[in-house]
Length: 148
Ligand SMILES: Nc1ncnc2c1ncn2[C@@H]1O[C@H](COP(=O)(O)OP(=O)(O)OP(=O)(O)O)[C@@H](O)[C@H]1O
Ligand SMILES: [Mg+2]
Image 1 (cartoon, rainbow, N blue to C red):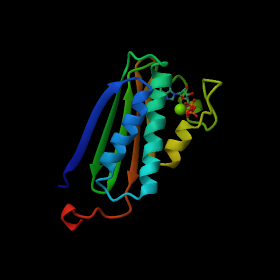
Image 2 (cartoon, rainbow, N blue to C red):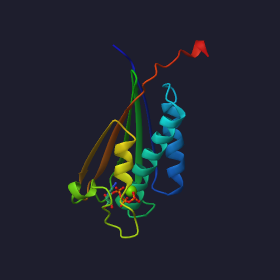
Image 3 (cartoon, helix red, strand yellow):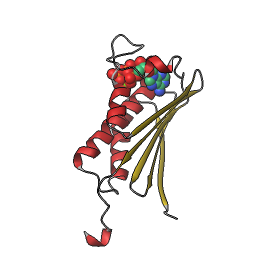
């Protein structure tokens, strides 16, 4: 059985923590042999998911906790971003590109997450929270640390 390598962090729902989350996810992901472009895409996808948790889930209040969990299984990276905020009322609409409940925003976050990952799953319950799960497969085989 292939071992699973996991990390999990939780942090306060402050915008400053978006940068922390994207770097933490990319640093962990770099244990696989992703290209720099892949790592950039991972960062953008994590930023979008964490920003959504803070801005929409917790409505910009610093009273919430965001969980980022990342898993490496063989050559597949799995990223989960979770909040226990207000949840999504209409999932079908939320996933449509250019749809936003905030007229000031572009409504492109989920579209980015979709295009920068191999799979995207969004689970949400109004007044309970939202969990976004993305996977990305690393095309190159990770080299062994001894080989570096
Ligand atoms: N974690 C979340 N909690 C509650 N609602 C969410 C969450 N994530 C997304 N949503 C809802 O889904 C909609 C679409 O999200 P998406 O990220 O695609 O666009 P956006 O955040 O509105 O705009 P952008 O990401 O371009 O700034 C949001 O407008 C919001 O209503
Ligand atoms: Mg967004």
